[in-house]
Amino acid sequence: MSNLRYVLLIQDCHFCETRDTGYIDKLRSDSAKMSQIAPRNAPLVCALAYDGLCTFEFGIAVELFALPRPEFADWYRYATVKAEPGPIRATGGITIEAQDDLDLLRQASLIIVPGWRGADAPVPPALCAALQDAYAQGARIASICSGVFVLAAAGLLTGKSATTHWRYTDKLAARYPDISVDPDVLFVEDDRVFTSAGSAAGLDLGLHIIRQDHGAQVAASVARRLVLPAQRDGGQRQFVPRPEPKARMGSDLAALQDMIRATLDEDWPMARMAQTAATSGRTLARRFREETGDTPLNWLKLERVSRAAELLENSAIPLADISDVCGFGSAESFRRDFRRLMGVPPIRYRERFGAAA
Image (tube, rainbow, N blue to C red; front, side, top):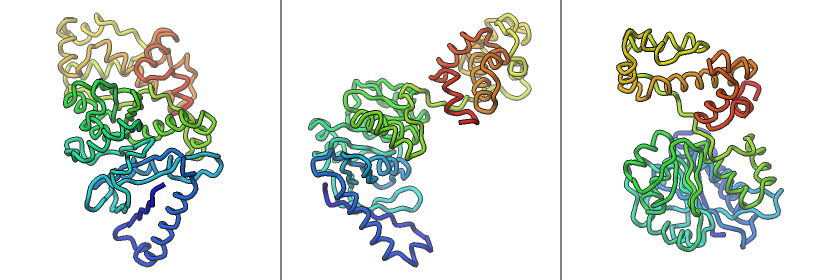
């Protein structure tokens, strides 16, 4: 492995001011130990670092791939690669010092691109060229959150499927129409290129890669150490917050929506909605489209699923009772609609996100 040194300097921190020399020496010593543990022929994981670095996403790469794991016979080598000249300042007043540059990417088995400094920030041509070269040499490349814009700028996602944080999916799709953007999933793998959704989904993606490289048992052990579920499927939805309707307080449509929310257990066909709103079905559909961006019946399904999710998270009410309270009509329609909108069946949702979990 390359001679890696990185130092985290916490600005305006009294602890570092009073003990900075010994503390920094210890960090350098620990870093050197990381470099020596893995055998020289172990696959090399490179995490990119650049000014404006997203600290949490970078930390995911360090935690998953740089942390020594003597319990395993084989593990990764790891290096932090400086993607551009100048200081590398990360979120939270942290500065990172890395000795390796983009040339090291030619040796990488896996390259991790943490969150980029901005969806609209240009990507340096040298970085794009280095990623293209590494990919041509057979490297796998993975982005976390907005790091997908680096991969897109390098042309590595052309004709491929990808995802990113739900806040950026529309912008990614509009800017790069040749990418098939899936806005709902946690991560996507397509021909040695991996993309993940919001920050924590990077952990799911990293565990997925470890599972591919070392098997399910090793991935489960890493997950336990992180106090995480052993596996969240990439196809699981990102659990985007329900958008608030544009209807203003006091409008007829807002009053109708409030009434429906208060009586979700009742049957609400289009005819009843229109009658309650004192309008025609066609007019009601048009107004729903204008003010919520959806049809009345789709809006109703989303309300029922959202209410069911709240009950699954915060109560021990049996699934059959939740189905009745939320107005699904049958246990089968409850499972079908919930899975379609949330990506997992109700029972698995409760296991992962319920109060007992």
